[in-house]
Image 1 (cartoon, rainbow, N blue to C red):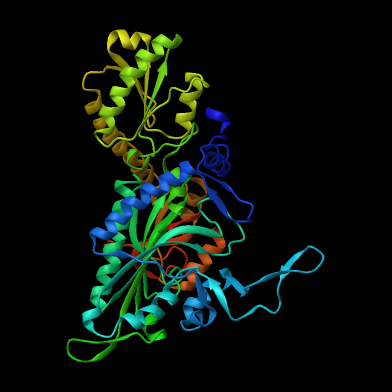
Image 2: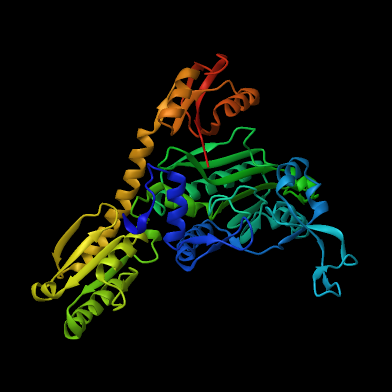
Length: 490
């Protein structure tokens, strides 16, 4: 096992924490609850960002930036929104420090802000206050804006990437003339997220709606994508909210319609965060380290020379340089690691830990035979192949690895999705097998709350296009018209 990682079966949580730090993705910072994203981890996030940003722009959105600080009074304008975030807010009360005369730096009590500022936990309030100045007529609509930013939610129990006090994300905020347009936008962005998760992250997701209890604070409807991790716990991988006219009414954002009628604007917001990094690690990786889908791997191919003496090294390097150029011409990111400070075995373990999809090894015999040894990270299979047509082979192999990683995750989800018809069966599956449990629920928040209190399982979503079938709620026995998905979750 590479670098002594705890095994997933032994302690999944410990395995995750060790892997994130040992693979150089992130580490805890001097600020409690905050993380440092290291260059290797950040380069994966940059790949995620680039793919999503293109998808946003392809669906007509533009990027903008809004302030980090939000006046406290803005939060009191939308009641359910403030209630949802009140316990997580970081508040700025003063704007100056001073020396107390004894060499200590203290807050200057005379520099109190007239109105406290909230460090943004999300930006609906500041953005809708801004939109009031941008929107007068139907001609000003729609507004399709996205922001890449950091947000702060004061979490007491933190885990790298999954739950930190400060994290990176994108938040889309759109304004529309009609309810139908806004709902269409909410659904479109959910599809963008699902496509990204499946095609880039190789993570299969369930598209669904949240129950009223699990909805975003201030939304009329929250759509979500739910993913299943290897330990059988669910992870919410993205949300898209239909906000109705709630924020437009709170901030008095009206427009004159084509018919000359004054009406409130319809709104959406949607976001994904660095939590996706946690999903990427937990969905695919193994006891030897990361398993990265090629589309998001910072290094897709690494070439390690195995040589005796400088002369052989120079000959291998000459051939390797040609391979590097050929792969780069195909937009494949490749690294030639000819460090003489580490042995090949150390390098193999290092790149296995870091999840590099394809490793090429080349030694003296390969030089003579015109071959290379190729090792896949996903299956750990090795094969010796001719250098002739190597670039085409690698290109096809990366596609195959991407698909294989997705197929493996999909097979796991299928295996860990269970239909149950009684509460005893529900609890038994939850404790022995985990995963998604498809069960009937009577539709009341009281039943949802009781199941959560007794089992720690929540309703992850009501799947879209859900099959309508008559049944009885697993807890109360009351009638139900469809099954919902329960799971314990991150």
